[in-house]
Image (cartoon, rainbow, N blue to C red; front, side, top):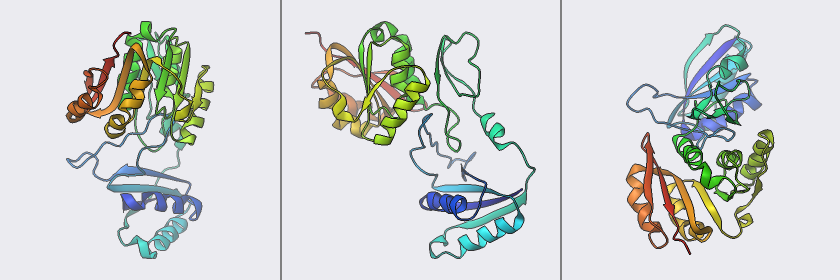
Amino acid sequence: MIELILQVPETLVEGVSDALMDELDALSVSVEDSDADTEAERALFGEPGMPAPKPGWERSTLKALFETEAQASEAATLLKAQDWATDLSLVEMREVEAQDWVRLTQSQFDPVEITPQFWIVPSWHEPPAGAETVIRLDPGMAFGTGTHPTTRMCLGWIAANADQVAGARVLDYGCGSGILAIGAAKHGAAQVDAVDIDEAAVSTAAQNARDNGVVLATGLPDHAQGQYPVVLANILAIPLKMLAPLLCGHLAPGGHLVLAGILERQADELKAAYAPWLQLEVARCEDGWILMTGQAATA
């Protein structure tokens, strides 16, 4: 086996990866941060069951595996000959020992603890001892080593407030892989509506729900109707500010609003955006991200 190692800018990651796999006979392609373990390293997270938010880092290292040296050499030559490949550079071409790549990749991902009783567990692992509630979702093969802090904090809120979730109608707005909706369903929610503007995310959430033995009502945003005692939204600060009237309009009297995807420095912006409807507070902080919660006034 021959490994071809290239350094490419973020703008070329997707195109070069596709060319290596679809046209140049690479057996596999992985993407790494060229600045890993330096001061320039940047986190790039992908949620379980969903792709990463960006195809690569500002400076990305692509590692492509080939059966023969001739194939790897030809791939490098053809890529460098392209007009658009001026910023692509060959780092190394080396022989590597043949391995069970699937098993090796899987060994990098362990179950993620939300609470001692609540875990996210890849399909190839057995649930840890003491795990009473388990979400089965596999991480993406190229990005991320676990669940994003914002997701962990949201799931932690669901577990800590199971008495509010159990028997309630719950809205997961911007559901992505459906992980929060599945968590709410596993904590006894009577009905969970999981909506997203991305039809692919809606389909993924529905499949992940089936794989976890729970029922979600999935759809585009207009599928969310009426008011909910619990509204969850793990998106980003800018869309969360724009969505303030809509999300608060879906919140039942006395209902709980749980927002994530927010950086610590953005807390005051969110508080101001939601002030006409309720008072947001920082409920938890992890790795520079915060969880913000608020409760609607009772009727």
